[in-house]
Length: 392
Image (cartoon, rainbow, N blue to C red; front, side):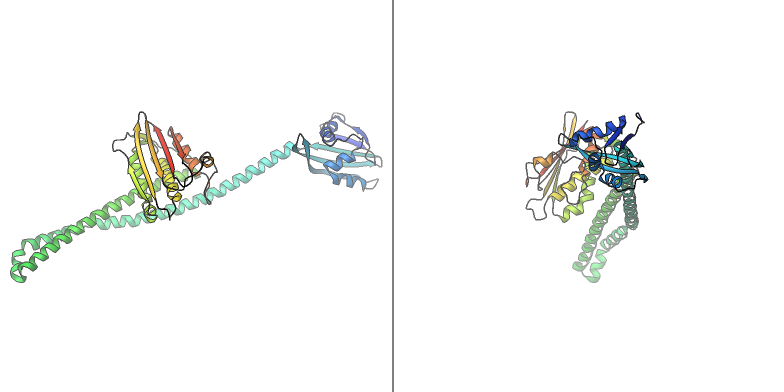
């Protein structure tokens, strides 16, 4: 047994060590050193590693035979102020009164692997649960968007049955017959009727045109939301797809502001946009870049207190050399230098209900477009500035 892979110790009834094989000496050496144990007795060592083992050995009958089998025990070794956790297992048999054989081994690494596997299984279970929740939410939102889109489409079809032409014909008829009407009801009344019909016709045309524009814009927004939902479904399923097409920054900003219009209006936040019309077109994934801009704008909105005197968000863009630079500045509560250094770290958030994934994802998206994103603030109460740069 001298060179067996498991540690073996033979002791008498009082714990005196009769024999240790090579593996046993190797396993016990760090314990002896850490606890300054020098006597030739195994009981003090067992008291440190696995106290119940000593108790069971002392309390068993002389002809006990097998006392215990494969019992695991954990303990800590202290070296240089560092606590190292170890895991040993023990099997003990009493051959006769003064011959007790103890087999033991170190299964620390095996235990670590098992714990890692359990953690992986747990993480996968959590990820699967999140996937199920995300899929259900995306499904529900998708259904709501489809329903909303169908109602908008019905409004559009109703608008296509435009009756303003008939109203215009009626106004033209009364105008042509104004002289006859004047003879019947008087010139003043006839003129008033013609003028009123003309005003009603003009107003109806303006209303119809405004509703048509609003419906077209809503359908445009619904299309973008559906694109974003498709991207999120791909993320939820573990498939990341980036579709690059020529895009205009002005168009992305306009679409994002349209989607946030109601929230901005509710909070009385004034948005100023200064983007030159002839900015260069660049290739990118429109949906993912919209996600970034929406995230930044939402952060700016949420950073501005409802009771604040200044409620402003300014958006500027410029083309310098080979870079397209977008700046979004708000009058929110700002942040300090310590916060600035952690903003893009995964899991970091300053919001009570935040996940800490928004800005980290934004940076990943911008960097996938060979761009950079930075956020800065002069301190609490002084707002924040986000600068996004794209290589052109």
